[in-house]
Length: 323
Picture 1: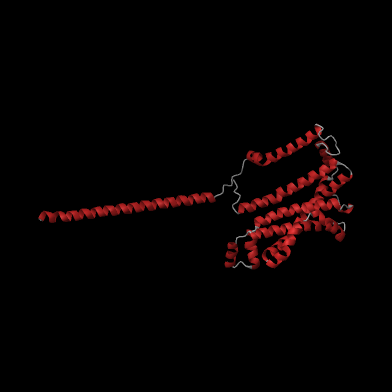
Picture 2: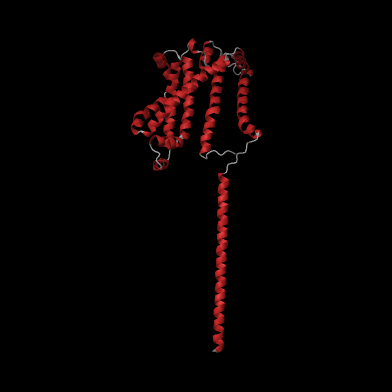
């Protein structure tokens, strides 16, 4: 019995020691797990920071040339080669129908030497940009009004859509009758062509704004004009910019139609009038000169104004990452 009593405390002491070791192991495991979890969390945060960090490294010129400059250059050269081939191989052997590229270049060169080329371009570009700015001032509040007021949308919305589908050339005769042969007639045609596109683009952008943004804005006190300025307009920018691009296209087309139909010496010679002069003189080289200048100006305005604006909007929303 004495030996039994003696061994019991030893066993109890061994059990206590074993429990202490197990508790220490559990504590160590918890510390290791906590350290591992902390390391994983730190790694996750570092990864998210890396994703949010945009590398603003400038592309080398060779990469820019290959990606941006070379493809359109090759396309233009290919068109000129096909054009020259049609003339050289007598597939189209009538110069009055298809002049050679060299003939068109000679007409452009002579207009430059006479100091007339920039005048043609400036006459049309100044009218187009001024008319587009006026359309912007009218179309933007009109679009907001249609988008935000149900009664106005029901009354005017279908009319705007119908005006947008109406060919711009249809407005030239009534504009001439109403306003006469002057610059006011040109601007009226531009407005009637561009305002519906700008307004409808803004309406489409407002319709795509998440209701959550509007509720959050109202919660923060952004209501009325303040909510429109700080919530609605910034959130609707993608659709609005698309409407602006389309509005410029309609402005330019409307102006060309007005210049072709309503020719008058006091109005000056724009690109549309140059095109009409070439038709009247049966000078296809002059006709192609006007067509190429109209095309070049339209592309240049898009590349210089609307494409950078569109990229900025997309980049500000994380939809276009600068590499």
